[in-house]
Image 1: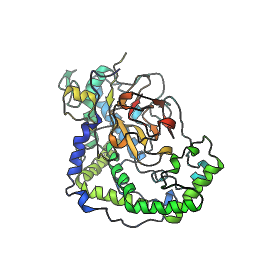
Image 2: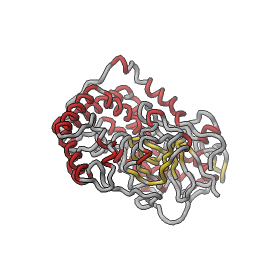
Image 3: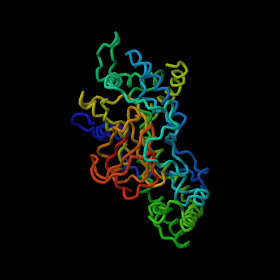
Image 4: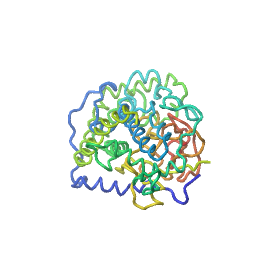
Length: 314
Length: 131
């Protein structure tokens, strides 16, 4: 069932995008590629340092704290309007959620010998099921449908903002907005979305891939692989090789994957790659310092408030 | 039957530095009204197979439910991620269906919770539905 008419174009947010890009001041094209700092020696994922943008995105624990706090705050608001059993946010508290910090074992592709030896270019099988499993989700289970009713949704989203229900006026933005407000109280910044900020790092990642320094180290890796008898121009290619889409990795796949990791170690491919990504992320942070300071304040406020809201059992 | 909220909600990545999305209801009710600043993650869509590389996050105001109705959708993936998704993890009780063309047309794969590689749908996704 679809809302009458219209699909929300994702591009509605382009206006926000444009504002974020332009508020940094100065032209990126004029400044050239950013300088890189120290280049770490990376022999495996445990050697990969945190990236600069990791400070502005939620870890698994932070996300779950946020989700629990949001649920508590929204439920408290919804209860004022007679919807004491509002469950739509139960599914948000998902224990399987890994967080948004860069996954060091995956962000720079395969870099661990153990992974290569066990899975080739694969990774641990992790539940390729056709339907929704409920394990790992707080409060999940049972046959109840916890999606909001039309009446609940009107209050949750604020579609009937200004209406008085049981003597209480539905606020602008509904209980969703009230929930966000409760989470950011005492230091957070209105309008800052601490979940979607994670997308802001992808531009730096893409720019790094196009940077000459990364291209050069990829070329060194490719030369190393060629000496082992494998022809791949960049470390991104083996994962696309249809020969390695095996349910159980063959010895051939494992051999290539191990050679891949060895060549990355020999040329310090991931160390250089990391340093360039970090440089672009730092550049982005410098150009959007005020915005990201607001993000940090909002994350901090959210963590404080979430713990309090959940403890109160609201 | 309950009315499902059908919102296209996605956070963009790649060339677009994007934070929020305006859902269909907000557009209908009051053009320009912003989404309340609280979102939950519905899926991670990875640039490469085996959950490698960068991620296109899809978010919504709440997760998915137990029914088979569509709960969320992205009708037209942003250009920088169009035909770029190679593996997917779904969260908040959602499962994902990927479509070859925008507005859910063409070939499709799903519904699934996680997929380490997408077979013939690799680097083909232009729209997504979740339930």
